[in-house]
Structures are given as structure tokens and as C-alpha cells.
Image (tube, rainbow, N blue to C red):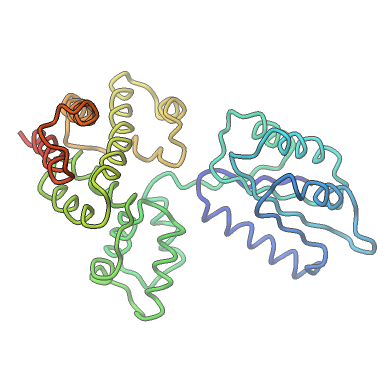
Length: 309
């Protein structure tokens, strides 16, 4: 039998795989269990033998294979060829986080497997998943931690487990005083402030983050995230459905952004994005008066301040 655990929640996929693995070992032992976390050409022959052979005197065999979008054509062809002839007593469980559902590999696996999807589309889904498991964190603390970790369930759970070692009950002060948002999560919070026209809050966060990272790295990151928001708002103005927007922009685990409400108009957001892009062009063509990091930061913050009017 072939099974496919997939979609956009790596936490839920990993959790389900772990449960399957534990239940299998409890019933059949670990001798007839094989788990492959990094699939490459060097182990194809070994995998071939394990997929197509049956253990002597053993009832079942379980092979767990973690897939990713970077698998080359040779490996994909190998998998699709061999899973078609797997013996009945051999179970192949594919763990495939955030696949491109348009690819031949995914479409064929979907046809050949029993598929179970594990989705976490927005912060309310993450909140529900985490709060069901951890009762020692307050609602406000969990909401802030979700923002700090940009809905990444694995990172949220990791932080809760570390805090739980010291604090029997976790409240919002623990999150504010101990947890430091990572670069990606900090960018997410800054973008959120900008789109809600909380300009002073966004500038405070920018000041904090630029004490840790290069201004040009920050600039490139904020441009990439703003671009997504610009196109989402543009497609919504064209009355595209959530499914259409997700597919056009390939949002997948960021599809929750489509339903977020902001105070900024599309025109202001588009103008901000264009101004920031022009800033990059001016810098590269030596049309800025200064080229030091502090001067570039001044120009960047000036672009953001304009949308407050």
C-alpha cells in the first residue's frame, strides 16, 4: 500500500508520520522499518531492494520516505516506476511538505496513493492546533507568539516547550521579554504595521532589526514581501477567487494572507512599492546623494513615512 501525507503544515505531517511509525514499531518491531530523510542517487539501489523485497517471516514492512521539491528527474522516475510494483505487504509512506500540485510527481503520487492532507492556512488554524496540545500558555501569549513566528507551528511549539521547562504557566510577558522574532518573522510584523498604517510602530521595529542585520538585506526582504501584498490586492480588485490567487501567486502555506484586512489602499501600497523599487535603481545607478548604509536607511524610512499622509 502507498500512502501520501502532504500539504502545507510540516508540523502536522511530521506528527502524523511519528504516530504511524510508533504504532508500527509497537506492533511489528523496528527490524522491518526503514526511514529515509534525504533521498539521493546513492541510496536508490538499497531503496529498490527494500521496496520490492519482503522480509522473511515478517508480516509487514514500512518504508517512510521524505520528499521535497528539489528531487531530480532520475529520482522521480525511480519512485514512480517502483511504487507501481510494490508487494502488498510493503507499505510506503511518503511525507511531502508543501508540494507543487501541478507537477507530474505529485499528480502521479496522488493517483497511486491514499492521500491525507494536513493544512494550516491561517493563524486561527495554528492557534487551534497549538492550544489543543498546550494548556499552560495564555491566549494573549499564544497570539503574540504566533505573530513572532509567522504562523510556523514547529517554531511555536519549540518555543513553548523550552519556556515550559522554566515556567509552569506562560503569559504574554514571557513572550515579550524572552522570545526574539527572527528576521523573517520581524519582516512579517513590519509589513503588517505598514499595511495597517501603523507607521511609528513599523519604524520602531525597523530600528531594532537594523541593529542585527545589514540594511540592504532588510531592504531586499521587505521588497519581496511587499510584492506579494501588492499582487494580492491587485488580484482581489480584479475579483479573483482565493483559489485563483493562491495558484497564480503560488502562495500555498501563505494563502492566509488573502483574507487579511488592511487600512492601506491599493493605490498607496502600489506607490510605496514603486518608490522602494526606484530607490534600488537610484542606488545602483549612483543617483543617490549618499551611498552609506545610514543614508540608504534614511531614504528607505522616508518612503515609508510618505504613506502616513
